[in-house]
Length: 421
Image 1: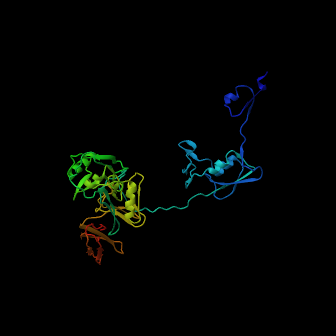
Image 2: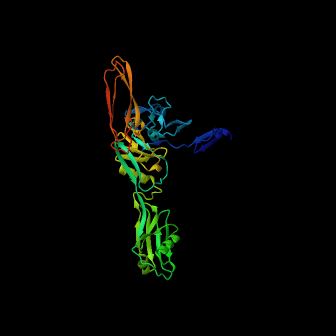
Image 3: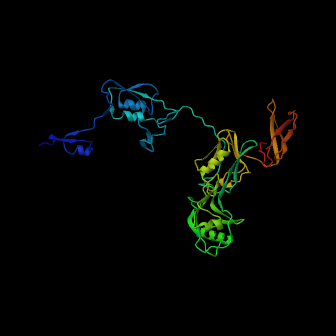
């Protein structure tokens, strides 16, 4: 039989080498193109997002090439790969004067389909004009958490001579006994069970503190409690009263007496069970303040403030209203990393520093109606908390009047005035 009599059939495309291997008829059963459900005759209209083409204008499409030429394809070439990385990329490859963000879901909707007639409308999905106003802000460091001391402050000046103070408060839990009775007359085996700072990384216990007959005085009892717990937890508060303090300074700390071995513990030591005390403050642990806590404390104290992190992870404090923000030298929350006396001003965004009291040279350039200029200068003494007034006298026949300046200083004598001279 001649090779021309062979008929071969495939359900997918084959390589050229395979097709030419044997002379004969080759049949490839390809999938039929998709179609719009329920549409077999008439015209089809699609409104969608496309890479190119006129907006909001129905255009009849006569072929696949016509569609590509008018409305573009799927994405564009990125890193030498066609149709890659299309989302949120600008259309620049076709030398667009004003790059457009890629829009291509309409192309996907039309792919692999046939239509008796097709009309395409490109939807305008642009957001319009967007403007940004720079907010005055100061930056701190990128720490994961911050260790401060109780009462540490972050003082911000939000307008001339107007300050707001964010204070970080924290104290460890303190459980105070009733007045005890000494000597204890313990026979041995008397105990109470205690838990310190439950649920924190510094938790101790629950653990039994057991006494012997040798623990007779209050000093003996205090020493025994501290030896079992491993830190100075118990303190003689005077008047036969004993206090138990936690290690965590903040509102997550706690001290709990869970149980006692008998009434003699209450009679002799003044502790009953169950009793507990919780730490206080506006942070959970002053030695490891979280970003969320810094944000809450500052935003509660400084009106219109927003606390977040910038792209480098640095702590950022900004104002949504107001023209300037300054972190003053009165601040003691140094671990936040914000530079004292450094500020930011809206809308220019220029940083500025506040001066201390001193003498500053003021220079003024005056231009007359003939376009000639004269420079005048004078030293000005600025005293914190006072008003500086000075007059610049004429230095040339071309300047015939004296000019008087008044610079009001801060009303607080503890804060140096802003140097705008």
